[in-house]
Image (cartoon, rainbow, N blue to C red; front, top):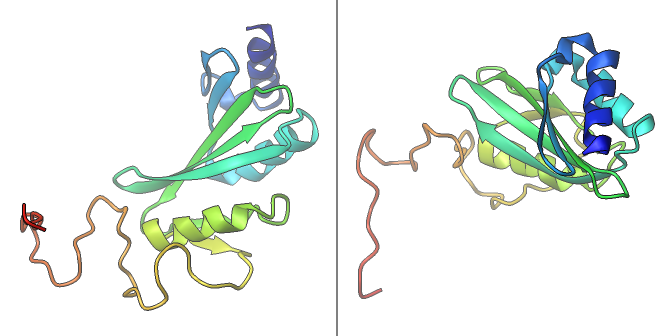
Length: 163
C-alpha cells in the first residue's frame, strides 16, 4: 500500500484542509471528502500533478439536506481516487468537468435528471436518461421523491402477480 500512503500524504500535505478527510479503503482505492469551494483546485491537482487522468464515472447521492457527487478517477497503473463533494439541496449547483473529460457530459446529465443538480457550463444537449416529456421538477433518485399524482406517504403500487 505504498502508493496509497504516498497519495494520501501528498493530498493532506498539499491541502491541509484534507487532513483526516482522505482514507485508504483497500489496496488501490482511496476516498477523499473535499469541500465544494475547494473542489476545483483539488480536482485540477490530482489530474495534472498526480496522474489521475481517467474519469470512470460520477455517482450522485441524496444525503438528506445536501446532494453529493463522487468523481471516480483512476491512474493508468490502476489506483482509484474517489473525490466526494456535496452542495446544499436547496442550491445544488456543480461546475461541469466536461471540458477536461468530455465523457462526463452524460454523467452530469444523469445528475441533472435524476437528482436535480444544476450543472454550470454543461454543453447544450438533450436530456438523459429521462425522456424529454418527463415532468419538470421530478427527480426520481431523491429520497423525498413521490411519483407525480401520488399522495404523500402513500404506499408504492405493487405489481400484479399476473402481469
